[in-house]
Image (cartoon, rainbow, N blue to C red):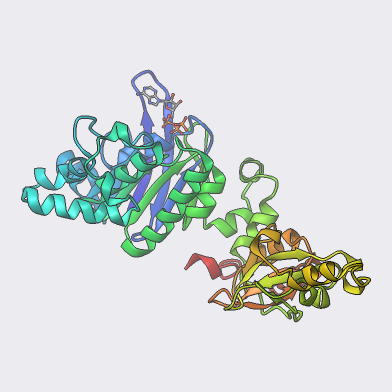
Length: 395
Ligand SMILES: Nc1ncnc2c1ncn2[C@@H]1O[C@H](COP(=O)(O)OP(=O)(O)OP(=O)(O)O)[C@@H](O)[C@H]1O
């Protein structure tokens, strides 16, 4: 556990970057510091590993004042990841990752083989290990930066905007990897971002700071979205917070409509027979949804083809992947209300596809049924105690 006790940082020029910060970052969880530019996020983070010294107050790590630990010793227990990975340009990827363990006395052989395992763990293809940092993409460099911070297996990780410098697609991949890794590793993580969506996705706890370095609110993501403490936090968490909060709300079991699907490879005539309102869902041999097939209403009652060849061609026509509309998302039956509503809203047929844990079709639901589920949950939660509501996705 990391504890800030009335911590203030005033820089030499008089700038108060952090003002009386009281905050607890629980062990084994991810605490995200978020807020507008200049609100003191980086300064707060760097006071944990003593890259910046507080002007007053204390930062405690597992109960001990960090001021009592020599910085070098402290930093052995604290990994640090920054925006531009901070890799050494003249060392290969694997040597970058092995640097700290080598300094700590590991043999070169052990350090390098461990480094390779870590690179694999953060999702970097093995053949890139002998390259130099400049020969990697930005996203790959960030993965190396994370692997390097993990190399000494520190119980604490500080991450300062680690995914900000990459494009949105890579950023999402890195975030997903981070979620997987944080579950596996159980480290105490303090993560800085200015992006509230990233904070909500990655944090177990979110601390919102305002300029002047004062804490505006600290709360789990669902609570922050549902009950912003004041107008500043409400403005910062954004307009669509009602919709985003559904991402933390487990759905009550939905009553699904049966969806008569067609298998890939079946005839278009069979597809036309099963279509409802001009659409039929296509599934693979294991009943996994593949996409929607548009069947013009007239196709159900099509007139006989004019020629024998035409009749043969129609009988041969099959449902193939190329014919499918891939616009709809699918939602797992035990997923969140956001996933269910999104599936319902995105389906070109107006029928959201719901699957079992193996991804097999269970049935569909309409946007109206999804909204009914949301209303039902809101009624059930209206009287629930504040700290137990929405706990579903936090565990
Ligand atoms: N070495 C320094 N000397 C003087 N002022 C500083 C120093 N470092 C940071 N500051 C100031 O302290 C305030 C907080 O800076 P900090 O970098 O902690 O904010 P931040 O929230 O991380 O900002 P950003 O999101 O833009 O990175 C800012 O006003 C900044 O200009």
